[in-house]
Image 1 (spheres, rainbow, N blue to C red):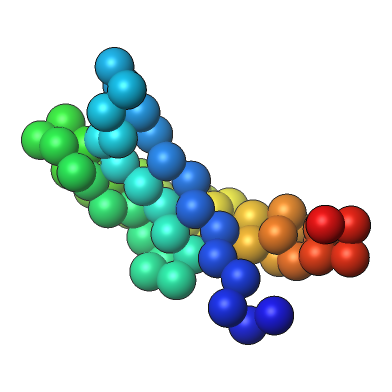
Image 2: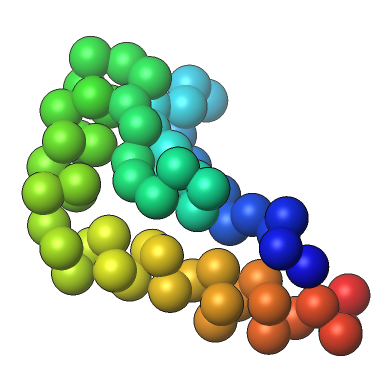
Length: 66
C-alpha cells in the first residue's frame, strides 16, 4: 500500500502541460507555459497541501472498493 501514487495532470490541446505526482510532492511542467504554471502552483502552500492530501483522501480511501 505504500507504493500507491496520486497523479493529477493538466492538458491543453491533448498535450500534457503540467503534472502533480504524489511521489515527487510538487508540480512539474512539461511545456514553457506548464513550467510557469507549475512554479505558480508550487509557490502556493494551500494548493500543494491540497494535492498532497488527495493521496490519502482519494487513493487510500478507495483501496478496499477497487
